[in-house]
Length: 161
Image 1 (cartoon, rainbow, N blue to C red):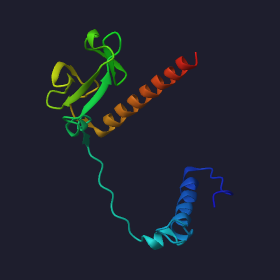
Image 2: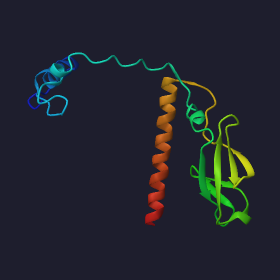
Image 3: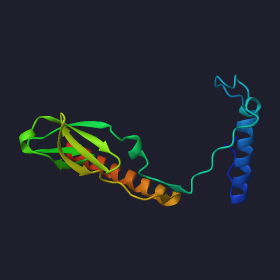
Image 4: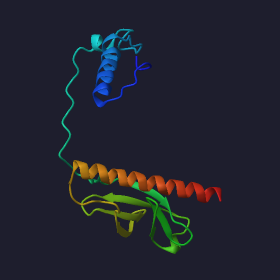
């Protein structure tokens, strides 16, 4: 369908794309189980309307869903543990032992526990604290993804060295 097309203008690109979409959805037999070798538009003549995108997003909304959840960490020889690639210090006396980080959504902190003993509370890093417009939220998520990708590449390089 597109093999012979070499659109030169934006209008030609739109024309070729529209023709391809018509072929793909209305003429081409689809081998998926739901379609049974019939074109998708024949099997699904109308699709449900997608929900509108939100105007604002609360990037910290996950916190309340995680309230009370515990994450186990082993304390390193120098008394620190790693939470989301960041060190957090407890006590050197706990080296080699495990502690639980319990999410406290209302205080926006981890309660660091050993058994039923509260050792300390540390703020949960990376929280935004306010809803963001959708475009700003998406930009923020992109920045986080790029940052994590850079960190992963640095760790891979360090492991090879």
